[in-house]
Length: 353
Ligand code: NAD
Ligand code: DAU
View 1 (cartoon, rainbow, N blue to C red):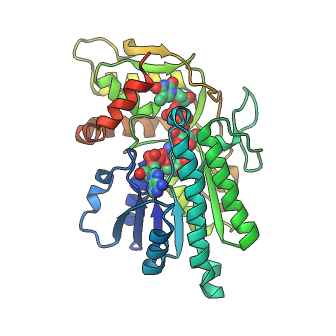
View 2: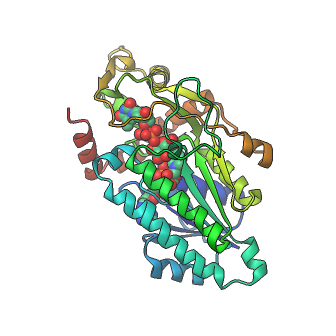
View 3: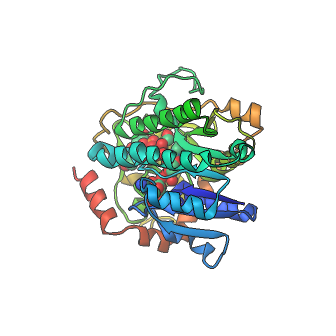
């Protein structure tokens, strides 16, 4: 038995592959383009593990994907591959349309051809699991109910619009062709291997480098945080027992304003790695120009996943954020290695003002 994972060298994909192989013997074929966000070092502990086959390539390359499907005969395809950073989608949306929309379409076509040639029994057990985001639902006002699976789609950024388009394609392939799909829409993840362009790892990395801790606008935007390993356990649960054609929202009921996140990270760093000059990390906070079209609040109603599939997160925000800060402090080489020239160029461009 084998599964095909796309985007398995990125933040969530690599955590998923590591957890999967730690928990079961089933082989993983890992297809990743290795964009700036893909890091093979995330998977270094799998070196020599025959259960893991890494292939560098694009989900939009239908010849490559058809060959992989024919060769490895996976029982499921899990699609993590995406362009994932909202700010980059504002600066350069084209890559988001290409991978998230065109790429997902191409992958669906390859999978449809592969699945269509199966016996009726194997068709029924095959799964295509699409990993998506809460951002497709748009922004919530204060006091509005958290996003349920039936909340209307109202994506506001090129990133969220491209993910919404991919979700619609996945849904259509089930409705029209009967492809056995599952979709998960998750809130903000954090944890090991999170690329330091995103808020939490950027704060940890900048704080230690003595750089400003950039807070967009008034810092009162709210995100709903989930430790990445809990997202991975939710995906495994949905793959095992999720109902075909259904959507499952994934979240940890951890709504926090950005400024609260910044203060929490600063306090943990003050405790675990105090500044040499005796000052506090919060002195490095800098309010900067807001993100255009910045969504004010996300919140996930994860009751369906809990009620129907019995999933619950293992970490609270307090335990998860402490583990995360410690992980970054214990892995300076990983941090150094992902801060390539391309990373430094992005930071210089994004925070120029
Ligand atoms: P990431 O940017 O860290 O990783 C994406 C991975 O996909 C990288 O390894 C990259 O090389 C690969 N990739 C990009 N384009 C590709 C292509 N055309 N073909 C093959 N591989 C390609 O992203 P992430 O944070 O790990 O997110 C993974 C998935 O989860 C995405 O679909 C994202 O929309 C979704 N998601 C993320 C979060 C979050 O908080 N990070 C929350 C909910 C959902
Ligand atoms: O909600 C799920 C989404 O969470 C995923 O679909 C995306 O792939 C993922 O990147 C994430 O999107 P966000 O835009 O919420 O994450 P980010 O870490 O970029 O920003 C979190 C919040 O912090 C957001 O309100 C913007 C703010 N922010 C971000 C950065 C990078 C700052 O205030 N300063 C910053 O420098």
